[in-house]
Image (tube, rainbow, N blue to C red):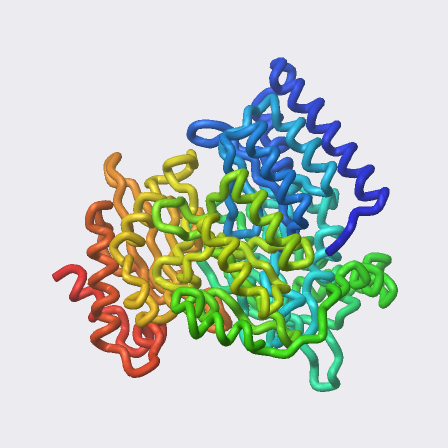
Amino acid sequence: MYVYDEHDRQILAERVAQFRHQTDRALAGDLAEDEFLPLRLQNGLYVQRLAPMLRICVPYGMLRSDQLRRLAKVSRDYDKGYAHFTTRQNVQLNWPALEDVPDILAELAEVEMHANQTSGNCIRNTTTDQFAGAQSDELVDPRPYCEIIRQWSTYHPEFAFLPRKFKVAVNASELTDRAAVQVHDIGIEIVHNDAGELGFRVHVGGGLGRTPMVGPVIREFLPELDLLTYLEAVLRVYNRYGRRDNKYKARIKILVKALTPEGFAEKVEEEWSHIKDSPTRLTPDAIARVQSYFTEPDYAALSNDPETLVAARSEHKAFDKWVTRNTDAHKKPGYAIVTLTMKKTGVPPGDVSDLQLEHIANVADRYSFGEARVTHQQNVVLADVRQDELYELWQAIKPMGFATANLNTLTDIICCPGGDYCALANAKSIPIAESIQRKFDNLDYVYDLGDIDLNISGCMNACGHHHVGHIGVLGVDKKGEEFYQVSLGGSSQRDASIGKILGPSFASEHMPNVIEKIINVFVENRTDEEAFLDTYRRIGITPFKERVYA
């Protein structure tokens, strides 16, 4: 994990002091709201429905145990004792007082955390696979490249006020895409060319929100050392040609569509030709320096499936289900990747209390080398757990509410805070998630359904990624009443697709039954071992529509 040097710490301290001065001026009335707005946004501060919201950056999802404990302290001292994990691997506080935000940022800076560029029309937190560095199917660890992009993009003066917000994701797995690169402004896949050289396949123009799109490939292979100069060329083209007259048409995806992917790529190549050999070009030494921070933990020499694990799985059915559902294969024999699910029924998805944050820190120290990761599904990963300690870990996390064995199932719902908190939301999201979880409370039945992504957003901004859910739910306003639109067939994986709207929206009280009817159509039409998305793509939307609106 990257560790700040004296330059990082100095820059961060100066930024905190700068924002403290800006906040004092705003509170004193010496800085108008329209002047303060871009300043507070680029420091992660929103004004929400009931209180300010502070979005704290978690670069590529990584958290040390001391950072988790500091988040617990901050949420307890300055908020209401809980925080929220987001779909972009960040953490949000929902109730901080404006005058306390500089103090919060100062406390976070002490443990190398910040809220820089978590909002505003700038390059946001760069994200990646939550299993990065531990999975067996990745070409290389993508986190050093995420860190290189973070260092390049943070405070970059040319890209501080883009036409609109900008998001980058990196994926290194050969088999899957847990980083959803095709629905980002820039999506980077680490690949090898025919000569075996490492480089990148570059997608540009993906995104969700009001106009969801899957990003096309604009370069099949970008040499490793050219990463930053090429990204700079993409951003320069966007900064020059992106629309600033209409915020709904300002994202880079609109520009790529207007120019066509081929036309956009030509402009990028032309811009790149002028800067590809500039000092921004990476060197092997620069890459090696950042890679040196991402060393392997002190793994023990172990064997897979130790006798103690086999015996515990045989003796405890609930533990066996949890291992099957909530652990993944690790690149090292005798280790497992463990996901702590934040989806216990009755708890808003992604919410975590100060005590739970401290518990996560404790189990990270005890079982996973003092590190944890935030996932795009609003869960938490312990990436390096010994298999012979899984049963002990399972017992430790059960009282915390993190052992619900529903990972990737229908009840592992992605859900934005919605109308309970967000001023932009058209409808509440959290009560809909809970009502669906209660409807499908039989885990054996849920397991039989297989993997299903159910994503809920309270508005078109799509913080809940409803467009790429196998089942997506969008809150809409109909003459002051909260209704919910359903879409089917989305995916954020390698087969990325945008879901199709089923039809007219539904009142909140009907939503559990609507989902049940959709699931019944799937069960009646699936073949052996066929997943929901496969069945949908084979039979189309019509059978679902006929059943739901009958």
